[in-house]
Amino acid sequence: MAASTLKVAIQADPLEHVDIEADSTFALALEAQARGHQLFHYSPKCLSFEDGDVRALARRFTVRRKAGHHIDLEAAEVLDLTTFDVVLMRQDPPFDMAYITATHILEHIQPGTLVVNDPVEVRNAPEKLFVTHFKELMPPTLISNQRREIDAFRAEHGDIILKPLYGNGGFGVFRVRSDDENYGALLEMFSQFYKEPLMAQRYIPENQAGDKRIILVDGKAAGAINRVPIEGEIRANLHVGAKAEKTELTKRDIEICEAIGPELARRGLLFVGIDVIGDYLTEINVTSPTGIQEIRRLDGTDLAAQIWDAIEAKLA
Image 1: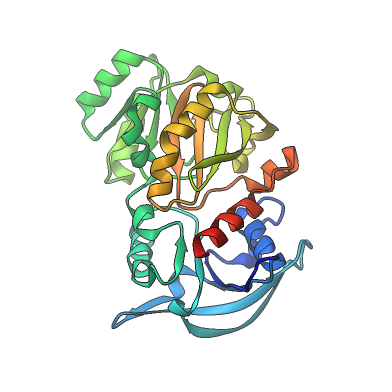
Image 2: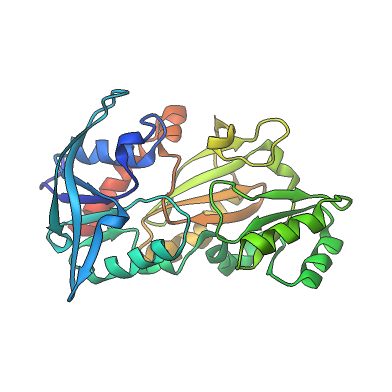
């Protein structure tokens, strides 16, 4: 039990429809409630700014691990977010202008209210771009709109991955082999649907053995799962059928975490999920990391408790 009751707002998509066996936000809410904290929910669209004041149309709620009846919500009321101790920024990507606008608004309530993760640093750290600051940990990577650059990268590496720069959940991720006749059509499709450059990476064969999700809490490795793609699929996202397996951190995993951990902590990125394939860091997820329920089921590590320990320590 926490030493004092905290007033906690969760900025997230509707909680009524979450998967209570998989959703990380639900696990964080359960842990906060068990510690005696008051919980409120609002969606990003219910956030308002006026003359320096930040308000949200929010509803107090309680949760329980009971399928079909996991949440009770009270009547909505307009609340001043500066009266809260903690705001958890937990809405799902895409990392678009609506997401960026929310970070700008939440920036106004700091440091009086602790926002997790720090909205300024969330804005500055989109996962496929933030990782480029650690190029020695990444596979060969190109970010470009230029066909000649992409052609040259493909000619050099042969087997490559193409994906949208601000995609999420594995959407729009393609493996393109050296003889793939769909290459040109894929580039045309990307140019039609996305204004941003696309990302190309050398394909990592170890992908078939799994894409490891490692959770870091305040810059320290805290738990991990291995996500193994189903047959005929390159994407290791759990929602597209990948299987979660228990795993251990390798020496290389620890090196990666120790290399990036201090910078995550310095930026106020308290809850972060990174993706590691083989020896390579591929993404740093700071927007709405997932995986803490799967980790607890597989090896008993209670990451929700560790995250709340870290939040309470910062407030203390």
